[in-house]
Image (cartoon, rainbow, N blue to C red; front, side):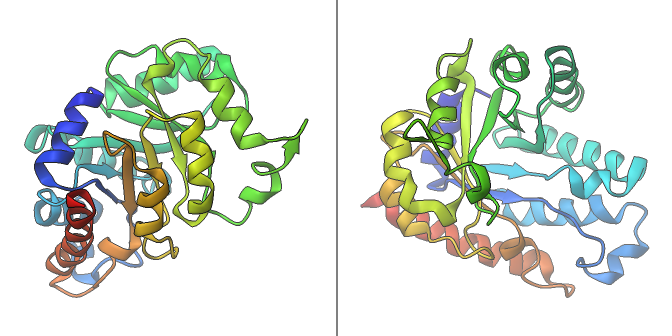
Length: 271
């Protein structure tokens, strides 16, 4: 999917909502455990109920890898279902990969070719040659971890080196990499006060913003400092939507939660 196609979908749906499909078998409605594939059954119900309210889905691969081969099969079925039934929706493999060049190439093939995701999250710590193999794929996007929403982000990301915070150096350096136009960046919603500085460095890039909802991030603040002329934001909510209920009506309740966010986004876009 191209960036222009993503922007078109945002305008059409009046939404820049991304829903995280982080499936924990201990949290889903217990009656689903009787299904042949409980993870896919849960995801399918969520997708069927919310696809008209969001522009992206983001499965965190750890929640599938934890269940071994069965979990990976569930991930395959989930992304195939989205691609076949809702090809207009942007898909994110939240895998946080990143390794030496030939290994990164194989990771990229796994997510872009075999699974046919539109994007994948990548850790920048190993630098240029660990990220450029992902960037080589046409109309695919590499979402670089820049400033995350977890408490440990302060261990390294905000430390200054020669007077500049490390996350800013990551942003500046990444712009020099080949095919950097295919980059997006992860910026946590709980770091909204940093967004103005981030926008000065990457004014045109899309930002994937987790942390709205269960982690306490504020949508209004994120939009105030992070929105650009093309919106430029994908606001992710996972637990706050998919686990809003663990009863038989879980999908309907998830849709209601998604609708609340979509309506708030629509109001912001109309301002």
